[in-house]
Structures are given as structure tokens and as C-alpha cells.
Image 1 (cartoon, rainbow, N blue to C red):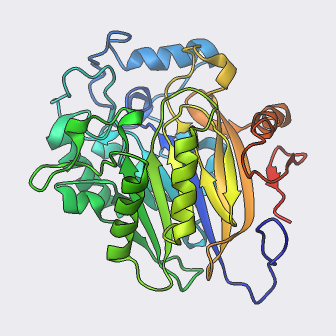
Image 2: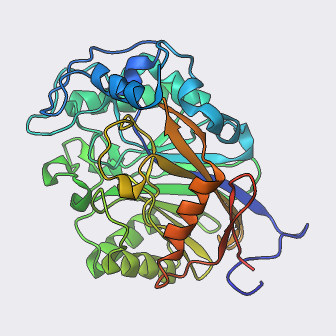
Length: 382
């Protein structure tokens, strides 16, 4: 092992590749440009038609085609995402996949995508969807049931929501072709991200795998959940929807929770999301903690609020792990920008902005990073 938590990537090291993305919101405006759009009617105070979000994006960036093919929304990210057996791609799917009209009353925003558009996720080779978020029940319990069924038909693993508490807590189990190790993905949602207490899955009620708090009790709950399913040799990813939408600051309670889980040996990667923009990350005892991946894909283009946070910029986190220890061997951050409701590679200047933002958080165990000529952000683990 070399200083800083990296490992020597010689021929004797077995490596496992994972790709981590933040919130993917394929409902509403994005659903409208796919092959089979649902009714655009919305129940929002801000916008009454999902077509309005497409129009905002067109006003900002130019014409957007309709009935696009399944690859369109992924744009220049597609060749990286769709690598088949070479990598497992994990996202937070922040959209109900349903035709349900039973929108949840009292909510400000409701996301849904037509199940007939599910091939857009398959086209990108998405392996696991975390569902423990504040939009999976936007269209009621029937909408959740249809979402689970649509993912099952598409052969996409999911975790974090289910027909009862037991199903919501089941991990997604991956058997990557480039490793003899299983990867277990557990997902939790928190009220701090907007998941209501009334969305918590119960013994006989569908819902989200809700984690009530981040203190010692929360840590113990997660460790017990993992122990129930983990066997020797398994690597564990904890996907968690936590914290408010805006703000670069990392809550000390989040950091303490993440450190306790890694210290316990229960978790190898923490995949945090909820913020609509990229937040800092750290490497702690050789393990990766993402505090906020940002929205990987959404329909916010043209809204114009919160510009200082650069919400149009997003990252794909490409991770190589030592499959024996879960320690990060290689970490690359691939920056993109949402443009005309699809992902395009961010410019060198935009990648430099991301680097400067990350460099400001000296209190975290974040290794040195540099921007390569084509905009790739390299993390120096040596």
C-alpha cells in the first residue's frame, strides 16, 4: 500500500470497477421528449405542464428534438456508461416509472416517466437504481408498485423501496464479471432530503427504507441491516439520500456517521446524494465517501436559480477498488454539463471550476486533484 490510501495496481491486484452517479430525473420534461410521453399535466404552483420545462430548456440552449432515441439524453456520457460487463453503474432514480394518476397530495413536485420509456435506462447500462428518495412515491402506492415491476421487467436491480419494510431493506446484489466478489448495495432515505415520515415502509405498507437519524442508533441500525445479508468477501455500497438541496457545507453529523460506518468495517463506499449540485467528497481510511453527487440528469435547464452552485455541472465517478479490501485504487471524476436535456462533456474551464470548489474544503480528507487537458479530473491517491 502506498501513502494516501491508494494501492499498487500491479498484475497481482484484483480490481473491481464501479461507476457512481447522482440523481437521475427522467420524468416530467425529459419524459416529454422520449418516445412515449405521458400526459404533461402537472400539479405544481410553478408549472402546470411538463412541456413548460422543455420550453425553458429550449429558451436557454436551443431547439430540442422530440421522440428522441434512447441514447439521446445520455449524450456523450453513453460510451462511458454503457460498458456492459466492464462496470457496474449505480444511480439514484428520482422518478416514479408509472402511468398512475394518483399524485401524492400536498407535494410541490411530482416526477413520473412512462414505463414504455424504460429502455432509456437500459440503453445506458444502468445496473442498480436506488429508490430511497423523496420522489419514488410521487404518484402513490400504485405508482411505486408499477415502478418496481418496470425495473424488474427491464432486468435492473433496485433497492431502498418496496411493498413492505422487509422488501424495502433488501440490498441489490451484483456479481460483476471482472471480480469474484459480490457487491451489495443498500439504500436509505432521510427526512432531511424531503422523504416524509409517512413514506416509511412498514410491516404491511409499501414505502421507502427510511433512516430516522445519523447518530449512534442510526449507525447501529445500518450495521445490523448489513450483517443480516453480508457474507465474507462481500463489498458494500451504502446509497443514501440525505441533506437539503443547496449548500456546499458538509454537515458534521454526516461526516461522523460515514466515518463510523467505515471504522466498523460494514461499508466500503458511501454514495450520498440529494443536493442538486456537486458537493465535496473524501477518502477516509482508503474508502470513498461521496457527500453529494449532484443531479446527474434533470429538466432544470433554463430555470436560472442558484447559479452560484452551477447545478448544470455534474460528475460521473469512476472507481477502481481493490476487490479484497474495498480500498480505492483509482478514482476519476468525469465532468458533464446538461445541455438541451442531454449530457455533454464539460469544458476544461468548467472542470477547473469543479476543482476549485472541491479544493476549498480543506477540513475533509480529500486528496490532491488535477484537471487533465481534456477536462477529466484526476484524483492523486499516491
